[in-house]
Image (cartoon, rainbow, N blue to C red; front, side, top):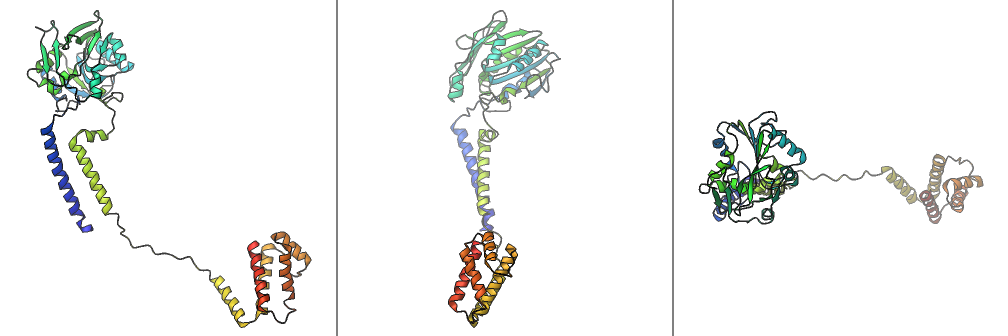
Length: 406
């Protein structure tokens, strides 16, 4: 069986590759990948590769990089420099109070922050002095289809003719139900002319808050002339920007409702990786089952060592018994008994009298009558010329009973 194992494994691998090939092909032909990733490297409809790559054309003089560190601990940004831009595009923007203060300090020092999210938590909303209606977020969490047309408008001014942009994909946007007009400038609206894009001034910098992140996905930007919407959004930032950072910290943050998964979710997120993992596990199981056979010779059974001295005693006993010399055998049994009493109970056996019987009874806790019968028989052995089978048997049983109880 072992010689066929390599052929079996190769056959399973070929079957798995063919299965994955045809499955992947049929999946692509059958349906659109509707997973909302918001990641800069993803080319799927709701990924952000087009938006990230477009930064080079919108900011031709700036250095483009990526960040996954919390605000204030960036690798490519500095709180003490000016003319930097941080772009955050996430389904759910949930900074804590410390992170929000670091972002505001960064803006006040002459930098720019662009936030696009379907929902913003209370900590951020209080600092922005606005209320956000995110009722459509229910579709994001509980309805994976949620396929209704998204339409967005840009305000005039600063934009000419109040342009509108639309696409036939997922909507999943929100709007500002309340803003502070003394602090906020409205820059855009949703399909019902409710504000969804605002600008706030903080110190020497700018904060842009946008509530339709689906308009930055590959599907939206590559639909007809919608890329102009993207260019208009970032044209509001100063042209002198020297450093642009695309932030993915909030995509990986644990309290983000979208990120409740472990490292295995990376494999199951992509069909090819998922089936590669399943194939590897099946191959491992087959290998284990094939290798479970015993390969070494059976371990021999080692018998317990025999007590040769006991066999010797039994042999000598049978020898005396067969010869019919019961008296001699009785003397030897009596001598063994007395030696046992001397070595274990430290009693002298010169005089087998009442005192000896009482002392042996005290130390062994055996009934005095039983000990007396043994002692009396020992004392009478020499007085008998002959000891019969019955007397020898009774004496033997008395001694066996003594040894067991003592």
